[in-house]
Length: 370
Ligand code: GDP
Ligand code: MG
Image 1 (spheres, protein in one colour):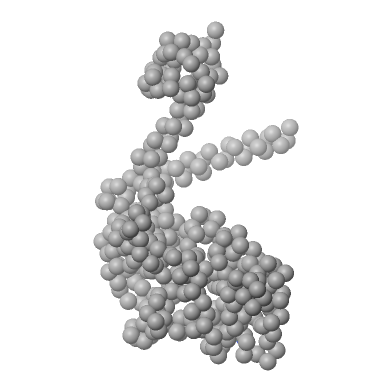
Image 2 (cartoon, rainbow, N blue to C red):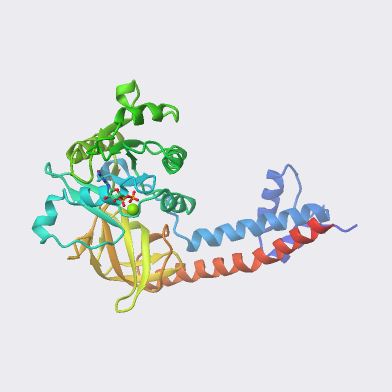
């Protein structure tokens, strides 16, 4: 009695009758447009098409970076992106500073460094490595939670005098969960009470088996203070990177991840972008999170203005329409109209999410009271 013909329903939904018939067929029902379907089936169809309509408009507006795969022949080697993790006071910051000091390009640049959340080191051999300047597993897991897996390799710092501590173990777990290879830097080896062997043994308990113990994890004894073992560490990182065959297409519209972002009094919204693929150029129009923008200027980790940034290179970008979140993706698009369209769409989606989230929680609250 409470039925509706397929054609009637199609008319009300502003869809083709044939499309409804097709959908019904997929649901296991063989009907024609003139046949009547019951209320439940009609509702099912509406939601089905509702979702589809949503998806169609998503595809129209949203940028589908996953579907946009680069052809193998376009891929070129890119520098590894390294995150340093470990227990507080085990020397993460000291090691980051020491590694930065090994950069042969800094001399050329006049030695002035700028903290933009990531930096690049050029080795004596001419290889480039990118280090994320925000140590700690919080930044790492926060980025991961937002879907941004920027780290290729984790360097786990363990102080040789202190040994494995709670945050060391947390860092091990985060790294394993992310499926990222790890290199252990046993730090503070300059100290008389340093016991690197004990560190290796304790690591076994957490299934981190270093090469000396018959495993595959590389380890290296360093002193961030005395700056020893650093070349060895860099060499091991490069070795690991080679095994991973890290590649990206540099010759395409750029895509990158926000490492950090802020509102700068003089310069407006600025974000450090780690380029994933393509080459970001001054003048490029982009969307980043819910904001659109146009690259006005780019500054590298040495405080120099640059015109271009290729894969794995971190740059501070000026010319954003707003402050994005760490982990947001930046995508270069064809023109400003397109950038605004995507940004507006994302803002709308975010607003929708916020407004629909409230009633659901109310419902949950009431059902919990019943
Ligand atoms: P973080 O909390 O992991 O970033 O650790 P820091 O880099 O701030 O270092 C904590 C303390 O350990 C500081 O007083 C450093 O000077 C000291 N330290 C770091 N590396 C070494 C090292 O290789 N040898 C010695 N003796 N001290 C170190
Ligand atoms: Mg620190």
